[in-house]
Amino acid sequence: METPEQRNARHKKAMQRKKAHIDQRIAAATTDKGLLLVLTGNGKGKSSSAFGMLARSVGHGLRCGVVQFIKGQWECGEHLLFAEHPQVEFQVMNTGFTWETQDRDSDIAAAEATWAHAERLLADNSIDVVLLDELTYMLTYGYLNPDRVLSALQNRPTSQHVIITGRNASKSLIELADTVSEINDVKHAFNAGIKVQKGIDY
Amino acid sequence: METPEQRNARHKKAMQRKKAHIDQRIAAATTDKGLLLVLTGNGKGKSSSAFGMLARSVGHGLRCGVVQFIKGQWECGEHLLFAEHPQVEFQVMNTGFTWETQDRDSDIAAAEATWAHAERLLADNSIDVVLLDELTYMLTYGYLNPDRVLSALQNRPTSQHVIITGRNASKSLIELADTVSEINDVKHAFNAGIKVQKGIDY
Image (cartoon, rainbow over all chains, first blue to last red; front, side):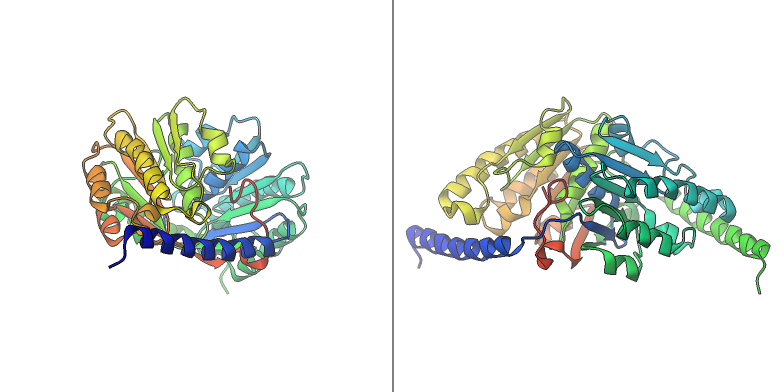
């Protein structure tokens, strides 16, 4: 049977090995660049993750631009917190979900008008972080030209971070991205008959 | 060949069907309760997702408590933004990673002292949202008693939301949770030699 002292000594040794491994990995990461992050998958947490990174960025004093596609019909907590913040420029498409409008032509016009804000932010050197919330749906539905979107992302300032959220991110978006996280439901309260919750879901 | 008018009519019909389906699902979700959310998996976005929900909650005027396990050795953007916010109480374990301390006994003492803050928040009716960041590691390492943790979660105020992050969430934590999201890396910038980035990673 191991004594507490032996247990502690074994722990210390394991942690020394772990530290050596992690230090080596940190030393190997030497590139500094603006990242393209994609948060996709069917699970809960894509937009919230993006807004968590926005919170971090604002905390560090970075200048941020947010463009929300689809949303905007009800009062979201992220909008309440960030829309008036001096470091954040916040644009909302504001048409509601495409199954609410039921009008393809007006959806396309709204998507293109909203994308124009994104393009402006992606050309602006003074913006450190750009969040394009729910952008992927605009591509899935064919509301935006994918080449135009990819070209604006590729030609942005080299130090600018971009965060894109939404289900079914396209192959070309994933190829261009530096970090791609896929978020899947293990379980979801909504499927158990629980209402969407203020602060958690919106 | 479909005319633009036919295309639009088909779109409208599909969206009407989608709306009927979604409205039915929304109508079926009638329960209102404090949720237990677990964000787990090896991918990037667990803590950021939790802090995004915190941002939403703060935006809606909710009172929030944050307890960060492990972290606290360097200045994180989420701490810079929320620690001084009047709606947020923010506690940090502040010992650094367990491979930095390399001392099991002092890690356990720090984990227990930090958990005492969590227990107090989980017993406080006036706190709407409790974020327990990186809690799972305290259970994986055996630093906290899992029964004590589960019991505090089960006995919390019924309307209180709790968000827990970290890899390898235990089976009993997943069973107790209302919503569990698993976040996996499709790719991660760090593995391509890119440094952790301010605002994105911390």
